[in-house]
Length: 87
Image (cartoon, rainbow, N blue to C red):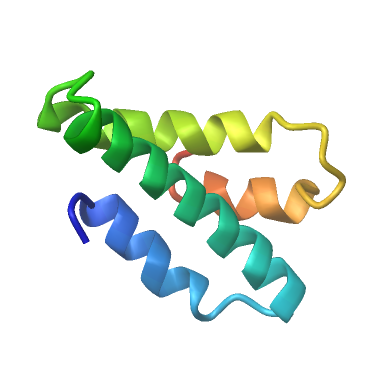
């Protein structure tokens, strides 16, 4: 793990308890994509300072939640909203 913040760690731990499995997989996929994007932006491309990691992570989640994909239903939005991340 290169980056990661308290928010990322808290989400990752909470995602382990999500049921049913399909819902958990969707939540984990969104977290993973956002993590990868934040790391790439900060540590690979050097396009933002390290202090921006959390903002990029949240923005990536919001971008995924704004997707028209039917997997991102209201329960997924509600789960992320508990962490203050809303599309």
